[in-house]
Image 1 (cartoon, rainbow, N blue to C red):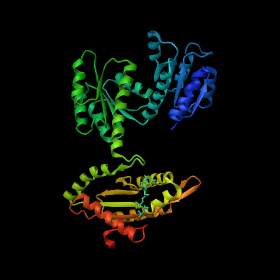
Image 2 (cartoon, protein in one colour; image 1 turned 135 degrees about the vertical axis):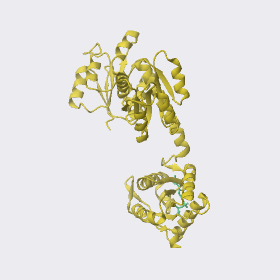
Image 3 (cartoon, rainbow, N blue to C red; image 1 turned 180 degrees about the horizontal axis):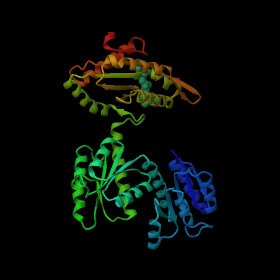
Length: 418
Ligand SMILES: Nc1nc2c(ncn2[C@@H]2O[C@H](COP(=O)(O)OP(=O)(O)OP(=O)(O)O)[C@@H](O)[C@H]2O)c(=O)[nH]1
């Protein structure tokens, strides 16, 4: 994805500060233009080369904001920088489809610019559904969201929105009007809340002017927030940003609790909580559930020979291989260099060839480290003997893993082998 930024600013000092922040805070490439002429040259040379522009309104060859209209005509998102602020100017600027405007006051203004750019980067991966039966209103909200680079889908009524959201787990936000045919905004919110938590799907209700009670009802039916129509461009974006950031913060807390800090894989705690349900279903329905314990052989030698940084690198590369191979199943870092994968609905006969080919793949893979390559082998124990508890299933896989270790490592052991 394109991540280059075009900074249009005639002050050498401000250009320096912003370039520094963009590089250190975001690590993104940035070109800078000091005049309208230079801006034209950059955009004519590479019209699709930038994902966002930061635009100073007053340039030596364009003193009245002409550069803003030029950049907008190229359909590029603009963050506007302005040295002065007054209500008239604010209204004029906000009538244009800009991302936001920032008054050049202090260091914090420039930090706000980097925060906005970071937000735009993330927004490109966020899918939003807008549900409204009015074409004008739907298109207006869509335009506001597109300016902030969200991926937008439109629904003409509640039922259509419900179907869209159910069909695509990547949809993270719904902006819904109240009064719609087929299914109104309250029914839609209630139906969604039966399946989606507030931290997984943000719902923002829209309520018409003069119907203040609607907003409270939206919240009571499960919406995260509401907006009273007509709303200002700025208010809309502040609310959306606030709610998306709250969702991301909760997600980050969840990840901190459920994921391993080094590899990003699920941790042992999460594995056990998710596996309880898999075990219950397998027991009740008489379906297979296979557990595999996978442990890197002689891992201590990697640390001793190449240092802990190499050990960390090897664990991350190994975790990535597990993710690529067993992404459809429940995989976790059990601790240290030991990993566990659970295969619901799959018997040991079916999964053994896959485990065997994974073992082989690990053996064949060279992990680059500095000018060297690290090589690993793994021992695996796997079973689908459910026993009388989840603990017993996993313990059994562990016993089989230690059989693999005792018999020379770099092998798979199942119940059949002993
Ligand atoms: N660098 C690094 N090392 C780790 C990490 N977690 C565990 N280790 C190391 O992994 C090594 C595991 O050692 P052992 O349990 O003796 O096992 P092993 O050397 O892999 O040998 P076998 O399991 O018997 O084949 C220890 O030296 C730990 O310090 C980690 O996150 N990073």
